[in-house]
Length: 426
Image (cartoon, rainbow, N blue to C red; front, side):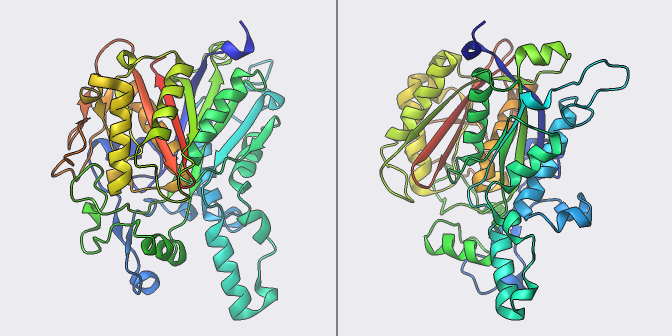
């Protein structure tokens, strides 16, 4: 078998989100149709035009030791928590190079393990917090940990340190497509024969007055301040912008041979990925959806899939008027008549938009949807936009068909970045 034809499978999942502190509690809340939205603290956000968000359900300081947490930006804290869960979920008993009791060789060789973690904004809360220290208390009050905390590659580096990954610790930065791009790059690394195991995903922690004010002034956010749980409403005729969330999603990918050799449980196969650039506008999607269409076609071609192989879609669907419609129309051009019959789960209706973490969190959801054969619901869909003709799963989960299943997970970001992951049952 050529390195480029290696099958790549998912063996571990981890998440910390507005719905739960781990993947299982997040999935349970998702299937129940719970919203992670809430009003933000009045003392910090009271003067802003938007005062709602989707903060993490579990504070990272409740999970990480204080001495470790204080040296990490919140985005790296999320990544590390989700990575530990995913690594353990994959069945690894220690960092790469560890030899389990009774075994004669390590479960994974460090020089065959990589880490790829994306973030759209990086350590913004550290930067802003330390600037406040400088301004209010002088230079001696700036933490010596500031630079390694705020650098965008901090989450990937810390995850790599955690699992002893010695191939590389890469960072993808493509705005809201960062997490999905990290998974696509991890797929390429394993296919190319550079690694047998890659821990990958995305993280974000940008619920702070400055980013929130900036997004609000762009008219990107929902202003339903009095009813936050109704704010994120993808594909709904009354949608008025997205809800800012935070968290991380991490997956462990392995070559199928490596997973089989150690007897690992396999959730699904990452069958392909597709990327494109709109080259249209720095902060607005191309209203024609042509870049989205090219990414969809590229992912399906990479996976060897046709429209008939697609049984589920987790769309980008952020609850913005322009973006949701353009995505729906692109899905129709690629999938044809079948687009109206494929169950679509717009899960940002519950998590809000977690920016650089979104594509990875939603990849976790898509993998679980195939593994459990259950499409999560979409909430807050009272009246479907007249320009959206999709089979949206509303309010209650829907059972997916028996037999082989395929799915698409879409992620698009500022700068015109488009990433689509093609996933199928193993």
